Image 1 (cartoon, rainbow, N blue to C red):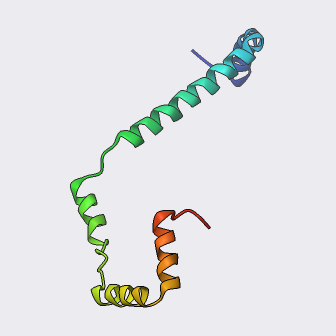
Image 2 (image 1 turned 180 degrees about the horizontal axis):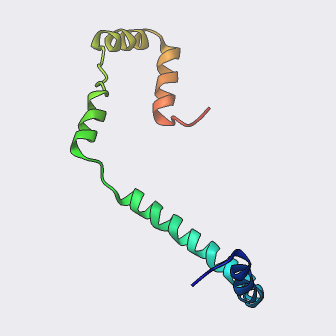
Length: 99
């Protein structure tokens, strides 16, 4: 079985001529296959759960916020001393989205 480059081209040429009529269909099938592969990969990536070690590693970097109670007491004292400021705070509590 000797195959020459010219023989290969001569054997493939009729096949290429037959497939020219189905070129649009083949392109649509290839695009659909690529789309299905992308959707499958997204689904597998979304559904994977992180390991416990990865979760603990992320949690170690998070620090808990601390509340300065002295600052809160100072603000409450200042609020109670000034009637105008007290009314602004009360309005903000009643409707925080009003400008």
